[in-house]
Image (cartoon, rainbow, N blue to C red):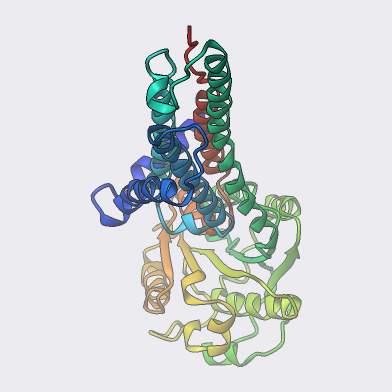
Length: 404
């Protein structure tokens, strides 16, 4: 429950209150409601015994609830596409939904005030006999109840949630540096990684690559990228369709025996070859590469601006916008600083996202940011359901005044 309420606070903090894009939804909601309130009485002119004031109030009930249906449908559709991972419109849309659900409640309360001996003259023809009065009161009560049924219309907006069934499968490829230089950082990285993966949906193919105890076979970067067939001599790569299996595998990983150094560049390329070889026939909605390393290459010389983005084959498989590095260089050995800086600078020059990871909290924050595109935040849907349910119940509980 705390996470549920905290999520609303997160939506508020992320909302850009001073921007046009934030206010476009609430203002657009009010404008659209006003347009519908004007148009509905013009197109639906059948009034029977009802006068204009009743029809106008009905329009201010039906119009906003139609808009609420559209807002719910938009929120649910964008949620299925994980649109909110890159656009912080949650608070703006929830505010718009609240406005769209509040206006019909106000209109219904206003209409309720006409249900009196004097007020019914404003909304229907004046009854001339006691028999006509009884018939008129019965008719007005039914008309009032029919207006309340509009509060159920927004349920239709939730039908766009069915688009989640076609969201496809994602490929999440993770390279975890498990050489001895990582030491305590490796444990923190494993813990944060397993916790983040546990929050993912099940529609992900997960590839985990770690270092092996075998010696590197390549001498230069150019030799590495000329390799076209996966060879498990330097790394351990495994593919998982179940996130629980991936979590168990990561938890079981240990540091290497320290004889081989860190053939990082070769392992990255081997991960690419393994993923292409084992998932090449699959169609993925998204593909992401996450490299968690200290960036210290001990197997081949590092060269400035020689990196994987130079390979068209590599960037076609792993787009630059979906390739991430978490740098957990521990600064323990001054001789490694230059290597770490050059490796990470090469990654940055390629347009790859490089984030720091010094503590478990650093890892957790970075992983949440990186993998957020592959998980849907159900709390947003819960807030939509809560706002709709509370406002709809209030509307359905409003009854006309008893006419004496």
